[in-house]
Amino acid sequence: MVKLLTMKKYFIKTFGCQANKADSERIARLYQKRGYQLAKSIREADVVIINTCSVRESAENRVYGLIRNLTRRLSAQTGYTLNAERPKVVLAGCMLRYGVTTLKKKLPQVDEFLRVEDYSFDLPPIRTEKTHAWVPIMEGCNNFCTYCVVPYARGREKSRSFDEIICEVKKLAKQGYQEITLLGQNVNSYGKDLKPRKKFSDLLREIHKIRGIEKISFITSNPWDLTEDIVQSIKLSKIDKHLHLPVQSGDDKILKEMNRKYTAKKYLSLINQIRKEIPEIKMSTDIIVGFPGETKEAFENTVKLCKKVGFDKAYIAKYSPRPGTAAYRFKDDVSPQEKKRRWRVLEELINNDNTI
Ligand code: 5AD
Ligand code: SF4
Image 1 (spheres, rainbow, N blue to C red):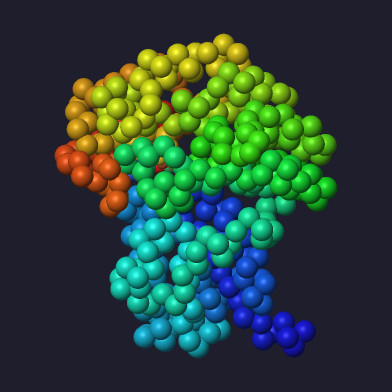
Image 2: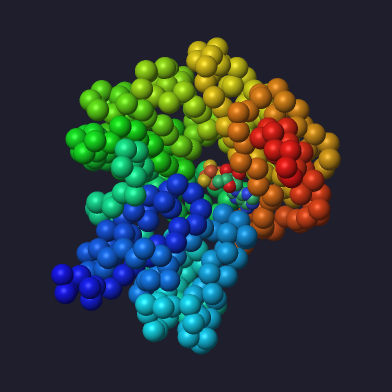
């Protein structure tokens, strides 16, 4: 008990996507192994691990703000009632793409940088949920959409072994987990890099057989990798009848500039085909407004596509130029006000948000 009282405490602040949430569950294990226990709040923590997102500038700015806040309190010596000293600040996640040397210069307050090897898949996650579990099945992306940092931040596609995933899900079922979400930037291309090659649809079928697991979801799918066999496997009873299929734009010129490998027409015909097979399927998407060169007409093409599809939900983002990506060299020529207007139009259209 005495030991427990003197144990140091960690707190993880996670930014960004579900992949980061899953990573944080392994970072938690790392800190438990290092002899820390979970702090109830950030104020109680001896060490604050910030799991960063680099997809948009605003996400990075929130990280800078948090670091400033945590370390400013050091000089003011306020805010930390349990710790007289400021917490140790540890940085992990996608911002590490800038390299430790650059980050150290920009953020001298950071005490340690965690690299993905420090929280690899060998570490069993400490899960925050009791009946639903995130299960990463692959890392990285090979697609190089021109706006996106993911291939730089998370590297090329790397699938986890088929048996390792099955083993993990069986264990989860034994522990009482009923719902799982398979995670990857591009889950449809799961297994292409494995020897022998495996298919995502085979993984779905195998997981479907596991007793105790009642609901299986997966994110994210890519329009050009969503093959007929995957559509067929979604028909299995335990597979969630929801497909998240990012379209990004409904304009062919913009799609080309984004290095998306389909046209609006092709996307629409894919949706029609899926709906023919699975009429009850719910559809969600990601859209970027204000990509370089997006004229009002180009944006209207996106509006038209959205009206045709009738998405159940959309995650709409204003284009944010990201250093290191191909689109960073394009002129960011849509004004912030116009980006906001386009964002509102789609929010109201798809997410029925009348409060904005
Ligand atoms: N600017 C705005 N949104 C972006 N996304 C990715 N990169 C950017 C960027 N530079 C969005 C895409 C992607 C989602 C995860 O984030 O819509 O699907
Ligand atoms: Fe980024 Fe495109 Fe890969 Fe998605 S498919 S992670 S948007 S590069």
